[in-house]
Image (cartoon, rainbow, N blue to C red; front, side, top):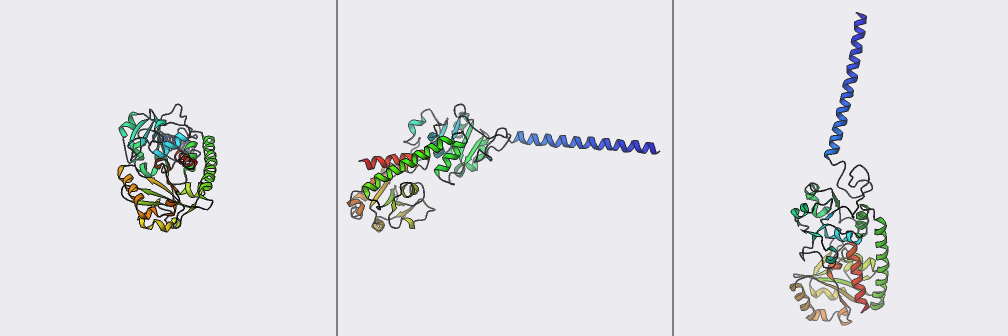
Length: 330
């Protein structure tokens, strides 16, 4: 009896071991299946050095020479171009219904995906991209749709500066050095252009920027897209009251009657595309309020290339500096 009891204990021990091994094998298989189902890692993210997309657990480095890149943001597109990367496809500008004029030549042969708010998903699918870059603000809600087509990288363009965006995008391609070089060249150019502007206007000249649209006259704030380049990069002094405009908004709508309150020594002007905006500005120029402004009398009104100045990307910002340099070289 004692011998039989010992045999039973031995059998029970062996069965317990086998059951545990089977359970462990089943758990491992489930984990591996989950990883495979999820595409072997997180396909959406920001920092490629930790929480970005991964194909095998390693840091993602995309080779733009072999990978087809789809950009669902005109600003991401222009940051890619600044790094010497031409996307296989890109969304277009909503106002112009085409690639933005200042980069159109650089995008020859690039597939058009429609506007960011209503992209042409059929064109995106047909272009067979290897990776898709999206702006999380505009396209984040449709992330799952993009992920069904290709691994998708989401960039929050509302966070950080264009410098941050450029560095972040560069990280996915191993082009950090190119990003740093671009920024260094930009800073040197900004210093050069600032000196030219101040030489013409005066070291402490107060400036403001306005935008005429088809419906209204706007004073641009210290916020992007214009604020940082005018008042930080170029180091220009703000006209009276510009600092009172909320930095959470890019502009404030005003009536022409309050323009004298800003007491600006120089006015930078952007006229929106379309005949109505142009007609509105022509009408403003005839108005006595405008004609009596100090900046107008001293011939310090400078009409900017709006597409470049409103393009808050690395490429747009450096082109805006080029535009300013041309104006102050005259």
